[in-house]
Every structure is written in C-alpha cells, then in structure tokens.
Length: 71
Image (cartoon, one colour):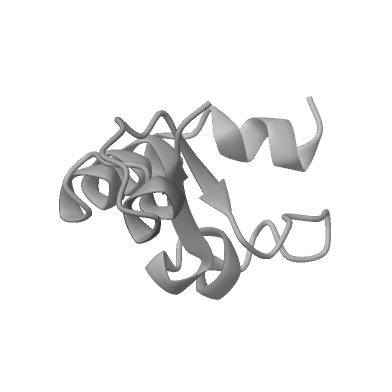
C-alpha cells in the first residue's frame, strides 16, 4: 500500500475528517457559499496530497487545507 492510500485508512485521518466535518456543520462549504444547503460528503484536501507531503501534518491534517464538499 502506498503512503497516500495508507494515510486515507489511518485513524489520524478518520479522527481529523470526523472532527472537521462536525466543525463546519456537515454542510457542503461550496454550496453554502452559493446559498444552497446541501449535506457534505467528502472532506477534500485543497492542496493535493503527494508522497512528499502526506506525512506532514501541517498539510495532511491541517484544517486550513480541508474543505467539506458534496458529490
């Protein structure tokens, strides 16, 4: 399993994702900006994770780099 796949199944990511989702009220942030109320589904990294930065919590677990989006 590569490092990025391993990160996405880690407990650290599960905890971070869950806490972040709760912190933004469970709503899609992009839709909310447009005045649309829609449930968020995926916590997305704004700055793409790479093999070089996946182990850097300032990138991979930093809430400033996350966004809750709908499908």
